[in-house]
Image (cartoon, rainbow, N blue to C red; front, top):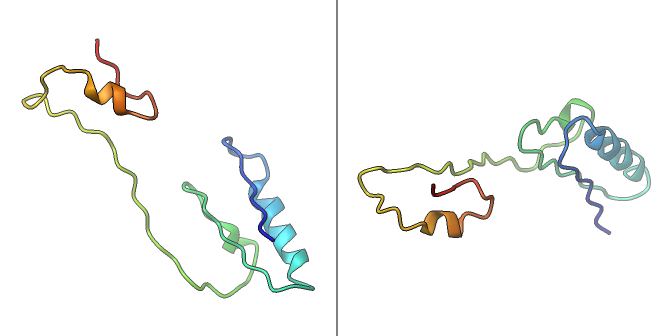
Length: 87
């Protein structure tokens, strides 16, 4: 069984719920808790467990190169987050 706890807003209790649920389930079943919070993966503050794997992840930040830009609007078309607008 896999259980995912997610929300786009901070402070909703995702860590509290996931750490308590995994602690409860671990009393009777083998349980793995994976904290994928990009800002504060802090489930380790609430649960004493064995860290099996840790990876640093980086996000790409768009960079506008004025000298190379031909104002074609391609970047606006391909941006999945609507973060680029050609004016």
